[in-house]
Image (cartoon, rainbow, N blue to C red; front, top):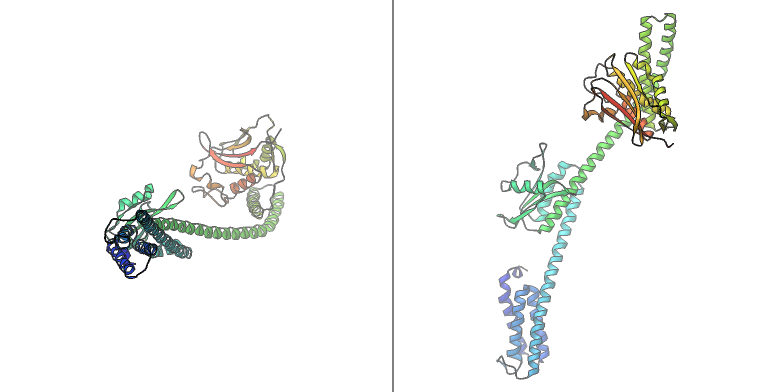
Length: 479
């Protein structure tokens, strides 16, 4: 096989094989021309099989000459006496050329198949190794060695984005012979580059793809495998890094789920333990207030207990929502009825504010649980009163927005910055600057869950000229 790899050695070898075959056949008496032709074709086949097309063609021409000179009369002359032998000689030449060509092609295809088989084995072993690693550090730590073996390369470098969005070698300092402009080109534009390497073989720069995105660059120096295998290795590396990301996200989700479950359990226990003593304390304070004839101390104590009762109710509501037992009982109800019920239940929160109502005479109806929708709107009303200055205006309005009914509560407080408008609907979230304002960070979370359970959506917008606008949008009920 080493002899076959030298391209020039095949030509003298073909001359030698044909000469030896012709000499042996000439030494055997009584062979027919047909037998000689078949045996010479066998020699041509062997030359083409072992040394490829060029030596095969030379062997075919030499075998034709040998057949003419040594086995067809007149011997040792290029002329042919019998016209039928001329046809036989032409057929022999064409057949020898075809056999040589076909044997060379079959040998080439066999070599390609063998190379593809080796590539598949290398990719299989590489994928098995990558699947064994479940975190980014260990994956990138051993990927270079595995890729170097698979690609038969002298050096392998993997570049991934750093915290500042620049590309950095995964293993630390990059090889000095790597061209950084080609690395940037492969990552920014997805263009690959390959050229002869000073280390022998090929240097190749490949983007590491995930779909249409790129998450890194693979550089192989002195590679002796095919570029096709290198591209497959880059794709496999991208899939492995993406798999590692999904595994990490799954672990974080499991951790978050366990944390949320623990919080729900603690909330349920806390709410249950607080409910009975708070109810007893409230009854005692109410009796004290009645005896004290509404003294200032009694009034303050009652207000604080009412606030505590409200907090316990919020905790119980969160527990019910997490447990999935707060299913809505929907019915047809008008927007005016919801606003009226909300003001009646939560109106005390607005005692130091000016309330403006803008409810149209048109009976805008929705299909929702009235109690849940009243509570959701009430949380928006409480927030408006809590975070806007005393004496400011709170406006409650209802109108149509396309096929939806919109409930809107506007205040004149400091408002909420746009990046925080989605975050405030998460549980226990309180924005900076509100530490002195009482609250648990559960009101808007409960409101969002209740509205979504009733098929609506909730959002926070800016009010004009200042403040925040709390909005609930529900599909309008059919007339």
